[in-house]
Length: 145
Image (cartoon, rainbow, N blue to C red; front, side):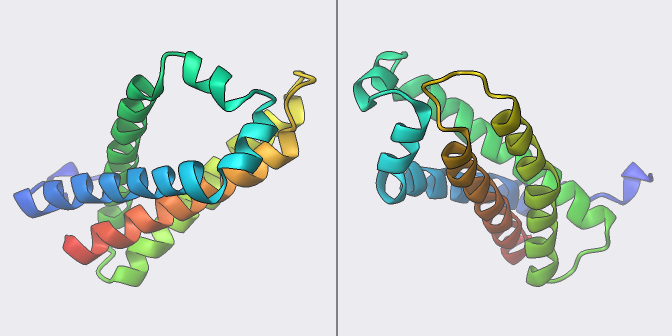
């Protein structure tokens, strides 16, 4: 792979950061409003137990960082594949979401041994967020870059 053909201009960097934030804000909407109750129930814990695990600060910071890093990966794949349209960005995000994220969540669901956890309900909420979040990040990246 020829790294010299990759574009790391200010516009691409801004697109990666904004794509990461878009993924992050979708996660906030997903887990705090849309699917909070089924997700909390699927974890086998209460909302109070989840909040006692150090609060949301560190997990939110890591989630934002993860969104930016995954958008950077989307940007690299978008450029390597010769992407040039918003649809290309969406397809790269969907490919990563379906090809990698769903597979990893599926393994977690299959091998879960905690009796309190509802692995298939957790898989549904988490995997669907990952696919939508990566698709959104790819879409946003391609719109800006």
